[in-house]
Amino acid sequence: MTTIDSPLAADEGTQETSPQMAAPETRRNAVVSFMTAALSFLLVAVPSTLGGLFFLDPILRKKNAASPGNAGGAVAAKKDSEGFIRLDVSASSVPADGTPVAVTIRDDIEDAWNRFVDVPVGSIWLRKNPDGGLVAFNSVCPHLGCSVNFRRSENDFFCPCHTSAFSLDGKKTNDIPPRNMDGLAVVTRTDGKEDPAGTEIWVRFQNFRRTTAEQIPL
Ligand code: FES
Image (cartoon, rainbow, N blue to C red; front, side, top):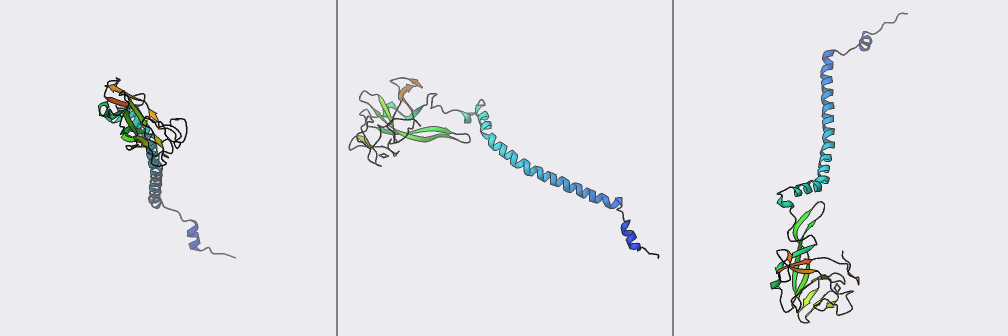
């Protein structure tokens, strides 16, 4: 018995792609591959670069700050290597009768990513002793951290939060605060050099732990 193969089936089995048809498809595949690779590269490279710059930023800024002539990186001139900060008031402006004056302490604050120049960091009470010497107290109440006021009617320091009271030499006068007011080192200088007759006032500002009988620096 003779079978006759369909001419159509024979055509399907032997169909070939001509070189003229394959060339455009190969080019299209190449273009798609290239675009995919480029897009993948951008998706990885851009976030990596931005992330790297973010983490390197403190190092780069420190390098810039160290560059000669870079005024933006200059250390504030009003703080010395021992931590004394020059106040904006002169010794002659502190009342000789012992009345305390409140002074805001300003300093530069810097962490790995930010630098804030000359910002308020606290406040002190400053007064003259009868011998003309200066004394300074951190105005933060050692009880729970409210601000201690000068109470003119009683001529003492008083905290309105829980009625802690202190004499003008910083000693506590009732049992509410755990310790005396926190005294701070203060000196007078001329052109930055220690001078008892100088009019520049320099204070080593510090904060201390609250609620403790001992004075513990933070
Ligand atoms: S915080 Fe000053 S008395 Fe309590």
